[in-house]
Image 1 (tube, rainbow, N blue to C red):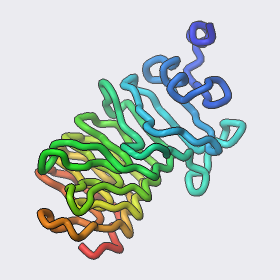
Image 2: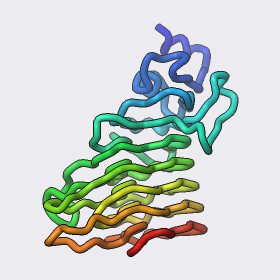
Image 3: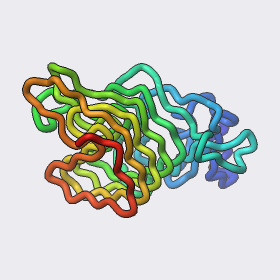
Image 4: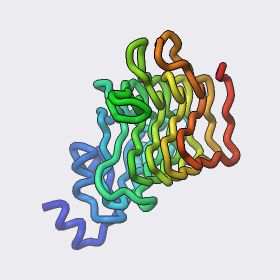
Length: 231
């Protein structure tokens, strides 16, 4: 089949949708350390689950897979609520996700801060440490008047991820409208975290950290802009 032929030819770059019917097939057919190129004009249906093979998954390509538009042409990941981008298996910094736009998420229930907290509207990085680069994470929401919500855009739990050149804007939560970090020591470099929203009206939990909220973490922010938040 195609996968065995690619291995025989030593092809370590895979193109979706040109060569595979789904992005999962492209990842599944790749060998450890391979690159998966994704066109910017396709929509990846959420949940987009990255498997632990040390893959470089790059979105935003043009039809020739030769160049990328990382301003207006990122590959869109959306659909169905829940967490839009997540990770499965042994995910280390050899795994890179780069060039995607993530929106429309409503998170999942986790035992963070309190049992049944709604977490990670857009992206969940839970006890793994991929590299996230050139992502736009916006329009994701967690929490309500009756449920604590943490990490409207992005939640990292016990992670040492590098998050670089990402735009995190217009997300909503009660703790960490843009980003919530629980434990671990992630590093944020040259990120723009702006105009995220805190939900008020929960009688148990007062809103905290419109842009960024860290709980028991040694997160580092280098060259980042955090602005446009009431708290």
